[in-house]
Length: 282
Image (cartoon, one colour):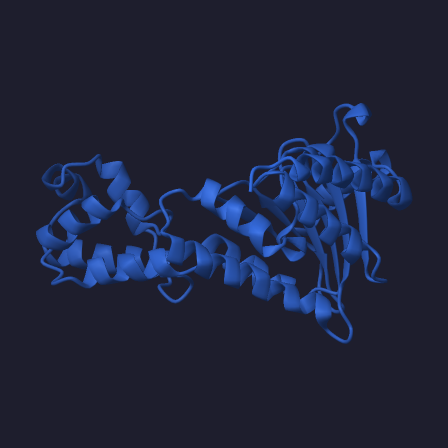
């Protein structure tokens, strides 16, 4: 039987949780299967927790704490993970983001976090994480808006964004929120280091339809790619694979409207939301 994969508990909170859980289980003299039977959950879930790939639901975590006689340690660590506004899978990407000199993004479903208003960000987080309290959502909004400071540096990175037309057509938060969000995008696109394009529905299918894609470039390091879904992300550092994603982005970029027609399309959508906002109940 192969030796269990060793985790570095310093890499993330979920890795720390996994290492702690494994240590407690081994100390208790239990196999993953036996621990799963005692909870009860499938032993494959125990394996995923110990590998740092996921954390258990709150009730399962409480049972693990009791069965393993952790004296509240697992409960406390679980709470700390849940209160952390930036998930582990996004943390390394943000470290890269802060060092980038250029960012190229294709956004399939939403305005990128670097260009979001507080109201739009709050609504996205509320919808995407309905289990969070209002206070937790506020913390996540604050963390997201805090990242935007890199665009206000004396030498900010280039930010080139291609939005799917669905991003500007889906009324996240209602007409008023969308009107203000699109106005913010237009204002930011007028700054020298930010370009925004839209790939219209009329362009048909394209190479990045599977989800959002970010390419980061650095002064003295190789490019990296970041693939993002609603609640997960994958950082790609292998040069050959990054080159393939760069090719995908180039194809999308070639199908997008130029910046000026893109701005006109966003402007028209904003005006439509303005009309709808005027009829919203007060």
